[in-house]
Image (cartoon, rainbow, N blue to C red; front, side, top):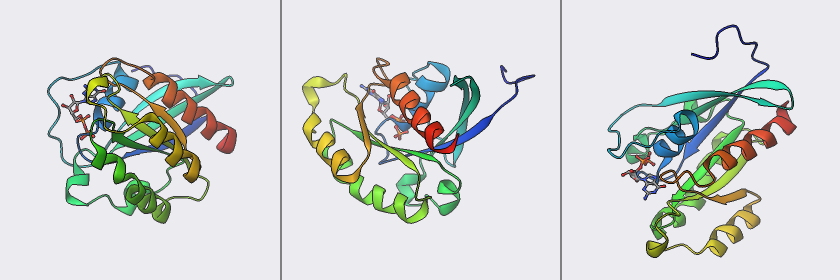
Length: 177
Ligand code: GDP
């Protein structure tokens, strides 16, 4: 719904990557449907969802791709990255390992994606403050070193979710619009 009779000026493909269970699907659900499903999905196969928004008086359709479980099988293929103008590298701030894997995901991304891709590092689950295993400064430092945008989010509480998508889409628009 919503897209009928609407002139779309731009379609921007954005891919979500990162370890399984960091909250990629919930971030997508929060942004596109303002929903959070307590029972997580068991979907296999690549999926995307769209959200249409106005940036600088242009109608921009964000097409956001979710690995939907494929990361468990190291099956994220080049088709997933093809045509992406933005990427969100998501870790779970309560799981140190998911942050330590960011370098690997970034390498994978840079190996497949366009040179001008806009990349945002996201530390998700900031509502679980007492379980934090990755200090904010570690995220900031990694992002600065690798020239990425950085934000901490909670898909559960909606913290920064809208902001992080708007930030990356606005930056994408500056480059590709
Ligand atoms: P994915 O495998 O990266 O797509 O991760 P999911 O979106 O399926 O989320 C994995 C688990 O983390 C699920 O149980 C979610 O309910 C939970 N989760 C996702 N985002 C958040 C968040 O911001 N806060 C909390 N507390 N839990 C979250």
